[in-house]
Image (cartoon, helix red, strand yellow):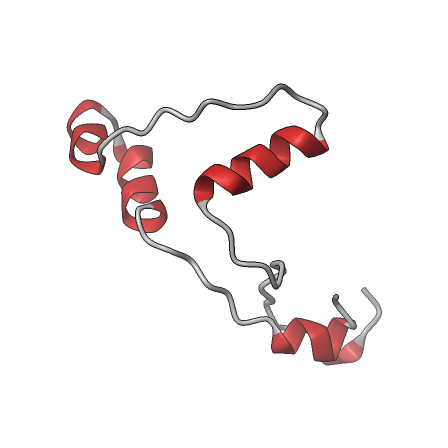
Length: 80
């Protein structure tokens, strides 16, 4: 806020470290002082058949790796 370079722009705010979805969720649990997680993997085709529209979004996005481009956030926001 208050940074004129950022007006009208959107930024990816993501870490530089690549991690699996299992590690991502474990990291969230650790940050919240939660228990060690035991992930349950649901095949994407089953999730779509049993679920609703929100599950389709998960299948389309989360079954693949996500890598975000963050140089604009580092340059404009001094994000690290």
